[in-house]
Amino acid sequence: MKPVQSALFQSFLVAPLLAIALSAQAYPWVPAATAPFDLSIHTGMGTDTSTLQWSIAADPAGRTGPNVLSELTYRDVTFDVFNASAKLRIYRGWLQGSTVFMDYRNGQGSGGEVQDSDYNGNNRTEEYSRSLSSAKDSTMGSLEVGIAHPVQMTANTWLVPAVAYARHQQNMVMTDGEQTIDMYNPNNLGAFRGTLNSTYESEWSGAWAGMNWEYRTRYHQLALGYKHYWMDYHAEADWNLRSDFAHPKSFEHWAVGSGSKFDVSYSLHFSPTFSVNLSWYLLDWSTGTGEDKVYFANGTTGGSQLNEVTLESTGYNMGLQLLF
Image (cartoon, rainbow, N blue to C red; front, top):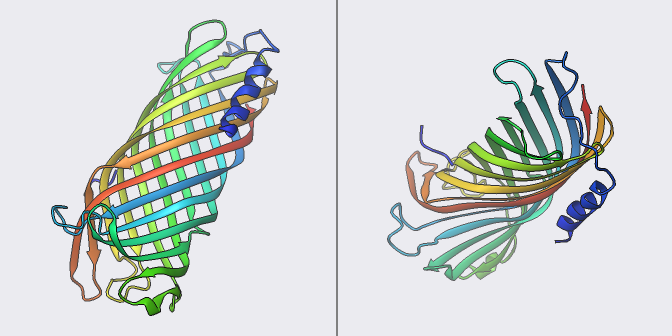
């Protein structure tokens, strides 16, 4: 197996800080002594806006020009996201004081643009072909499972180190194609003659380690978090209008990457069992050089160097939480 690796900020941060000032009583973290654990369930809706970009060189070693032969940018792809998560806080046994958690997200694309550019010169010069298309109806999903161990620092503040397994998928589509640059065949400019319906299915999988700083009172909780990821990247594509490529798998990508995620969240507790949550995050992942393998219609294969893959995402979530 090959390795595969503002204003909005202020609205989420300033309002919770004002709300925290309304209360000075510590929020009860540990329930009655008779309970071995408690379970909290969160569901919510939100928006994720992502830009995924990758490029390949002209040869497998990346030594001959152009060093960027072809580049795909899935720009500002917006997903309407459903989120569900669970936390199991344990108060007895060898995991006493720890929290086991699971986060699941699923999103449907509602907008975004794809740019496909090809170059004859190094460093993205002598662009001879460019097409634009729609990324609407792309999909995404993610799953994280891990364990955390809160450590109380003061009456109201906590540090929460955590580790987790993570898997993040995006199925990017390309439809409604339009050729905007074609130096060799100017008659091809305009809407594609064929029906564009290409896909690029990417997956990041690996682990992260992180830390939350949390401020808790009886009615409010503010958390600032940072996570560092170590990820394998793999992708499969179907370029449906390329008759020289095989289908449904036209090419694959492999690489190893890493990155970070910063998030801010706020919870308003109406009762010991019910709260409302707001959260915002910023994610930045990238890979090193990897492999691009092409499958041709005649049964042969080829390929080149995958230069880099980058993923930048930002989003927010609003939801409800119940404590059992």
